[in-house]
Amino acid sequence: LRAPSRGPGGWKPIRVVMTLLDEIVGGFQILHRSKWWGGIGYLSKGPVVAPEFPEVADFAFDLIRDACQGERLKALVIQPPDVCTQMPSRLAHREFSLDVVTGVNLATWVIDLRGGFDVVERQMDGEARRKARQAVKRGVTMREGNESDLQTFYELMLSTCLRQKVTPNPSTAEYVFRLWSAAKEIECLRLYFADYEGKPLTGLLDIGFGETLTQWKKGWTSTESQRNPNDLSTYDA
Image: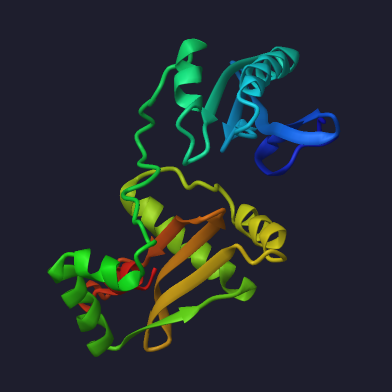
């Protein structure tokens, strides 16, 4: 299924659903757009295939190849599902380059929450816990945000990108608003802020997907660092 028009930033989706006897057994979505040198595609968290049908994975890669050729894409970036152990090796056998360095960390660490937060807290660095307690004593408070706070969050994110000298991603606030609109019905987003005297110092936006919560984007004004707003934000997350 190809969308009739392009979305924000010029991206256009190709969506494929694979069925066997009317049962869905796999699928994927490729976002693609044109650059001056040709088209580029991005396949995030896929392809996905029902575990009981491993042979469908090879068929999925054939369909991915056909879709790329049909759109005359010059390059395709594939990010398999987080817990997938089979797709990376299959990609390597199909001449994909694994672990391409992009210059931006997609994840800093993964925290196992199955033992409850008490276990996580005991494993935290003592200095991190101390700074989080200091932040509260120094007047920093945490609060949940809503749609009316999205522009504030985006401006905090831009502030961080400027300091780090990286291109903002997403490039406009429109992306954030569209994400919120698409996800609000299933309540898989969490927007929250660390405030001091009513002023937001840090903002974070998390995305829930399956059994994983990902800290998607964050921003900081770079002020009031002595109050440890980032440490409290991380602890709260």
